[in-house]
Each structure stands twice: as C-alpha cells, then as structure tokens.
Length: 95
Figure (tube, one colour):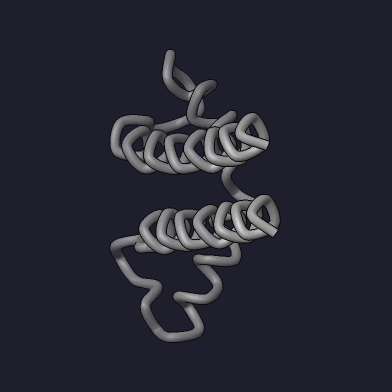
C-alpha cells in the first residue's frame, strides 16, 4: 500500500511540476520555432486537460484577464485532490 501512496503522490507532483514548467516556459517561448518550443508544446498537450477547466471556471467568475491564474488554481486543485485521495487510502488501510 505504501507503494500505491507513493505512486499517487508522485503522479500529482509530476503534474504540478509540468504546470509550473508550462507557466515558466510561456514567458520565454515566442513562436513555433526554437529549442524550447517542442518542450513547451509537449507540456501544453499534457496539461491542457487540467488547465482548460480551470481557465473556464475563472472566466465564469470574470477573472480571465491579462494575467492567467489558471495554473495557480490547477495547482491548488491538484494538491487538494491528492490529499483527499491519500487520506481515503490511509483510512482504508487502517480499517
């Protein structure tokens, strides 16, 4: 069971790092050419299923503006979901 907990935690940490990487790369990548554009494209493809709902939620509340807060919301949501899943697994282990 500890292996399962570590695997789930690692999965969520990788997602959080990918979102952070996407946010940082967005400052440097301009256009489809360059050494970082391929990495940026891959991070977009991996994180867009998480980022799009966050972006839509923020737009509903009128928070979609010049600064994109969807990475922050996605990281907070992933951290909460990770904690929730891990607490359920720990409860099941103790039962």
